[in-house]
Image (cartoon, rainbow, N blue to C red; front, top):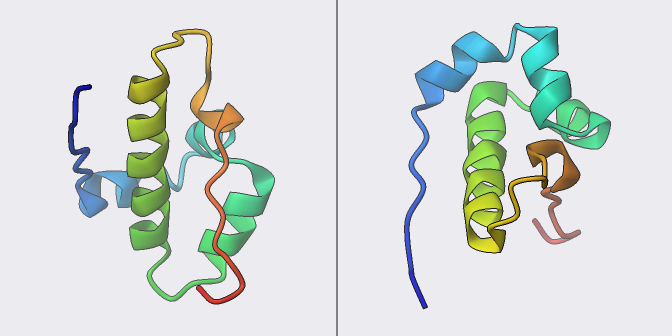
Length: 77
């Protein structure tokens, strides 16, 4: 079993979240709504991007798209 860490620079995601094509390609509509409601939306987008990237790499299925993976919070956070 391989273990890895995905690190995402928030400032890089902050630049990309103004691009509708990037958002649509990577995030679900629910994720976009959730992140947009937060004070530091870039940070929330970056967390989701890192999680999606980690899942994508772990699954190893190249046909799997980042948008196919949805990151959700539980009711308790």
